[in-house]
Amino acid sequence: MIQRIQQVAVIGSGVMGSGIAAHLANIGIPTLLLDIVPRELTDEEKKKGLTLEDKLVRNRLANNSIQALFKQKPAPLSRKQNAKLITAGNLEDNAAELSNCDWIIEVVVENLDVKKQVFTLIEKHRKPGSIVSSNTSGISVEAMKEGRSEEFQAKFLGTHFFNPPRYLKLLEVIPTSKTAPEVVEFMKEFGEDVLGKGVVLAKDTPNFIANRIGTYGLLVTVREMLESNLSVGEIDSLTGTLLGRPKSATFRTLDVVGLDTFIHVANNVYEKVEGEEKEVFSIPMFMHKMRENGWLGSKSGQGFFKKE
Ligand code: NAD
Image (cartoon, rainbow, N blue to C red; front, side, top):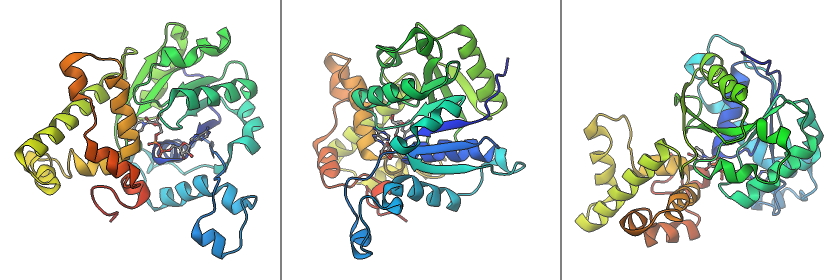
């Protein structure tokens, strides 16, 4: 049962939203990429005499992401296909466009309140029958559906892509207690046959499957580093090339993920567990300090490493 997906909207044009939109556009699905309006001008924009109302500024987040996408190599699946339309825009100005979309993917910051605000806006504009999903790394999808209409809830589920979405094969599909079985079935088939992913059905547990294991492994490694007085470089060698991984499973990965996002994701579990497990999922102080300094990783130009 493959329902026709003729247009998709991706809301949130950060690390993941831009990558998901690129993947969709590259396999030939017209994709609309939307984000919020920047509230401050950059130094460069000030020098150019631009204002917050200027279109170039209003669409900065989405435009920057698209420029970055065009620099990436196409994913193997998409080589045979021609990239189709991809447009960028401000969410508020383009919300009416959501009524033309068959699938709307929420990819905004890992925060339940922000995500719920986005779902309120989606519900106002979406057409009945359209699928709505969240790319959350581990917030309860059951909690996200609260307050929405029955029809919305039947079409709503988690679709968790991995970073970078063009290359990583895994797609976790997370139904809620109200997701219609045919929507889950559709997403499994569509994910595998059209998106080229390996789909795994996951239960709605904190951080689902892969991130529960991944966050655990990463934080245990960091603790071991601190206790054994090892350096970031040594850990990256030990968990990367020495294990036969092309890059690193630890700090370079964290730079790609984004430290702010990683802290939110670890907190998803921290808030739900007790005892020893809680200790494992607590974030070391130096990571909080890095976040305060804006050393978030590749997206801010500096994380554990400077952007190459
Ligand atoms: P990001 O910080 O790179 O981007 C988030 C984007 O959301 C920003 O561009 C921001 O402007 C936008 N945004 C915030 N509030 C908004 C609103 N109200 N309306 C519209 N846009 C809004 O974050 P990211 O890494 O792309 O993560 C997005 C989601 O994907 C999160 O739920 C995260 O947990 C999940 N995720 C992240 C990764 C990863 O490796 N970074 C992997 C899988 C899943």
